[in-house]
Image 1 (cartoon, rainbow, N blue to C red):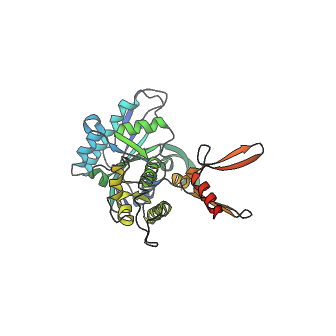
Image 2: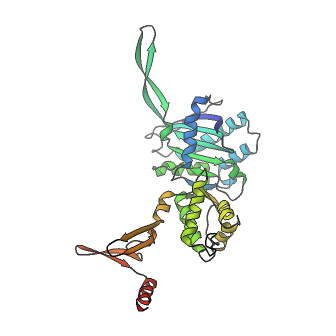
Image 3: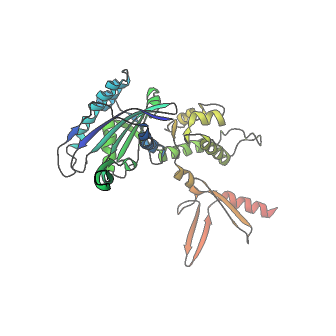
Length: 346
């Protein structure tokens, strides 16, 4: 169950076409009612979407945000500690934004939360938007129109999540950032927080495929056949396992324990094959779809063809060539040629 434990909101006042920065820094926690939990939870859940990228904290001596967070994390984490931490790190943005004319103001929301046994901190840049409020006037017994400003939490400009459990565990990427089409915004947010070695879920999923391809000669025994599992069956079992997990994430330790009966198997193989991969990351479904299998058949010719999608393309073993008005299917496979020739000679 999601619960925001501490929330502080600071306002950055800056016009995109003027230099100079002005902050309104709150002295107390924001009053968050249970009715506001849904909006906060939606912002935290944005880190479960595709397009999120992950990273490590840099060296505290080289980044003031990292140093400030380390000080806060080692404190009692009381309300005053939290407010002091947020008021310390917010103005650290000045050195990045003061000379960037594209930068706009907005509200920086710091939300320390607990969610299904996990604890973390979400930092969001949210812009406000004007709307119209129907206001009941009892004196005239009528509704009047009034302007109102509200935070557009559904379209936040940028967000960062610090996973407390991963922060305690060395070697894990404790930082997550929401995808932002404005590269400048994403870059200064990442630089402000002190993120290093950032990698997207798409890149991590591609690394995972590289790892599975690298261990094709070390596949586990298939319980159904008693023989070595095929690479296709291995990938199917892995992704079925991921789909059964509540967070829909690839966890190398969980995959190793369930499929290889050794939770360190994939971690050790990644090291031996020199594949840099996170031990846990969000599966990128677009990459899985492209790396899936295509199964087609021609009923008239009695031909059935099944192949991995990544083997198809202009420079791939399976491709389509335009020959005038006709299209020709080409398959470069000496193995298939030998099988056909040998089969016809029997």
